[in-house]
Amino acid sequence: MRWDPTRYAAFQDERSRPFHDLVAQIGREAPRRVVDLGCGPGTLTATLADRWPSAHVVGVDSSAEMLEQAQMSADAASLTERHPNLSFELAAIEDWTPTASDDVVVTNAALQWVPSHVELLPGWLAAMPSDSWFAMQVPGNFDSPSHALMREVAAEGPWAPALSGVLRADPVLDAAGYLELFEDNGFAATAWETTYMQLLPGEDPVLAWVRGTGLRPALAALDAVDPTGELTAAFEDTYAARLRQAYPHGPHGTVFPFRRVFAVAHKR
Ligand SMILES: C[S@@+](CC[C@H](N)C(=O)[O-])C[C@H]1O[C@@H](n2cnc3c(N)ncnc32)[C@H](O)[C@@H]1O
Image (cartoon, rainbow, N blue to C red):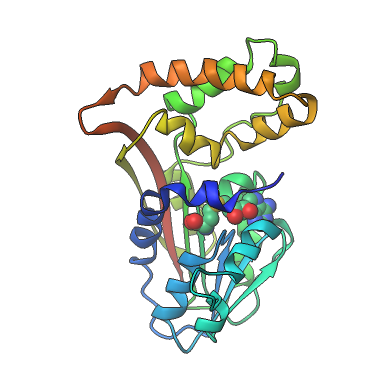
């Protein structure tokens, strides 16, 4: 499934705030290596390279399109040219294992795409060195109207056969679940959730938001069976109409509440 870095970057400010709220809780002074799992276009990974200039910072992502974006930039100097301590690796999170010098692991808005992460975490945590930190953030919006309506519309129109089984079940724990998981595995953990009231501009902004992330599996499945694009357009029109009712446009824009789940843990 391809990612579109331009579409993803459309709400860059709203998408970056949870990252900064997350990494603010990491207490490590001078890590040797810092890994950003599911780093996307790399702009946020570069802030880790700025924070820890003596560390080797590695962004890991399975999307060639996202990593290509990380190698380019408007002012001609790529992120890696501007940050000599930063590099990127094309790899699946499922295949990653920590090295003995991975003192900080950050993963922001990525583990919801890795349903096996709850089973993988104990092995990762066991392999990390003492005094290391693991910081993660995942969306906790599976039951919000944006996602419930997506599943509802996907199940009921002429597109339903193409979308059957495509929209995944909720792959994340709640904050208490991650807290216990980290504590069970020898880390002192803190976990919390925040609902960001995002004020989005423009027409159908919630549709534009989910097109960059959660709607992608449905769009990819429709793309495979819909050469004219008519079925996709009809699906999006129906979904957009319901989103407009759930998230009405107000005098200042559209308020889109977005719940996110955070956990930051320090190996004893
Ligand atoms: C919503 S983006 C988040 C990007 C970045 N961390 C940020 O906060 O802006 C999710 C990223 O996870 C990556 N991803 C999804 N599943 C993955 C997997 N199994 N292995 C590696 N990367 C994955 C995607 O390619 C995408 O770049």
